[in-house]
Image (cartoon, rainbow, N blue to C red; front, side, top):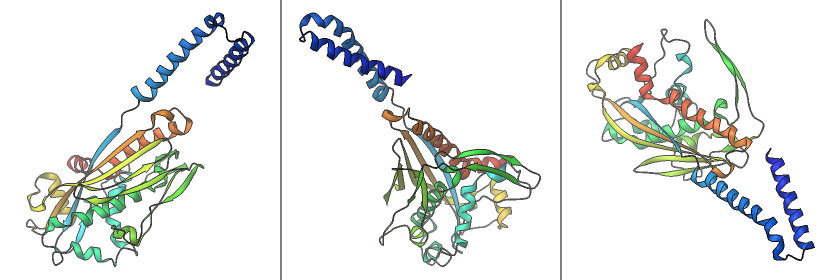
Length: 317
């Protein structure tokens, strides 16, 4: 339909020029042109309205993440503990939290000095390690974006819950290229210095990271049609000893903790994900694919990292 309208416009423009030229551009020819001028002005207004006035607002998602820190041993826990009572549906959730608990076993990470800084002999107080944990969370979030199912245009072919596990499949798009998370010798995130991350993004995409400051740490993904801004902020912290109720008791049982745990500290972080599409090209085929991608990023990130969802699961399971 759009191509047909464009052909009509071009045909009218050509015929109008021939008609005006044949009549020496005299004023008597203007009645033929005036209606077209009005239609053009109306189209300009409608185009401006579509691009600027009706431009889609940014979609913002806030996800809270809690990290349990053993100040004496230097251990950290995402507090996602898998048990035999977990349903198969829940076994496919909180994958980001699962990954946080595995990083300390990676060959590239296990001998890093950063783990020493989480012990009390290297830090004056348990809530003085937010910068280290922010770097770990930045790495975890970037690593999460490298998952195949988070790639723009990924086609999920479905999941089946069998008696003893989960099966599923999907297909990857062909128009994506690898984008390495760049860093140099002055890289502030020691995890990225030790192990690279590569994201698969549409051609022409860029990834830029913000230097950490007192407000947090973050990065931005830009494609030709969309933008994702991620910000990681530490917002709260308290001693685990004050944890009461069913959820606190379950975590104590998972870790076989005594009632007195003065060395345990809970760090609270908030991840802000802001997604937006560029108004001028948001109706293109690729932009529509990326719109689905942005929706999947917001929903899946919450399922994989949210402390609020995990706490609700513990409270009701």
